[in-house]
Length: 366
Image (tube, rainbow, N blue to C red; front, side, top):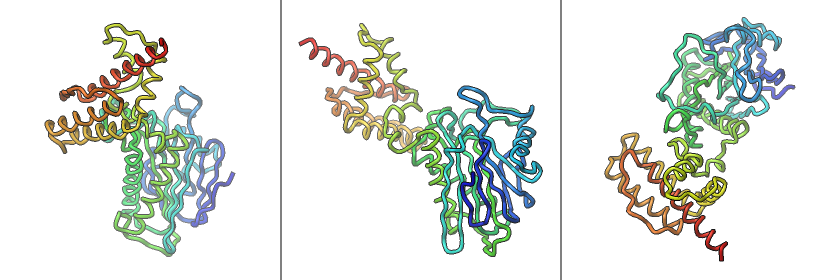
């Protein structure tokens, strides 16, 4: 089906698990894909392909290597494989987001698919991949179409601006890395294709943040990335208003707290269902989430070297006392050691669950 006709005259279609952008004229293309990547001026189309086969299954491959597999995909889509570049992804094309912004005669369109729940990462995270050929599917895939002509170097600058916008969107959602305790700056397999209209009378020599073109790129990409993540992964501000989701990048999870309770309690009597239910209610108490995210950000600032240990720990003790008060607990002397910063939060929640369940048991007994 046809999804859109762009101001460039190019038409966007969705079929055969793919988004296909067919060009209506000469275009400059810069692609990060292994297949047809780099800078080109002779392409007829670009595409984004859902390579999933099913839950828990590897990405679909039509040949022993990624490039040949994508060439076969192009042929299946009715595209000359030598006149196109394409991206593979684990996201569904039905969840794609399209955002268009204009200023005077200039129009920028961002077409994004993406998810970061399983593959979100922060640049510089520990990595295990070391091969000469990449076969993984991209996670946040962006097709950015600029209805203006750009020199090759500025097309590259537009790619940088586009990447900054993607990262800014992830930061505003506080998306977490799944490989470290840091915030995600993207996924490990993101891909981007930037297209400029060679036939446009508009010609720009700047695509950075100080240019109107850079502003439009930032706005379209940020909006489309957020919408795509909401559709594919359910990653929204409302879903991120969950303290346990915010804490999971530090290893503080409902399952982990349950195991700590079972291991350390003198006489554990709670069933896991009771424990998890009480925990879920406790972290939603008024004031707990706010103080909790302040506690998290305080630790981030310390890890980034912006706060000294002594001032960090002093503020952390006050926040833990505030959370205790929100839960109706007597504030304890929260002495936090460097290696036990998040453990202090974990112990507080375990104590709160025990107190909460103990009160309910007594009340039921009466």
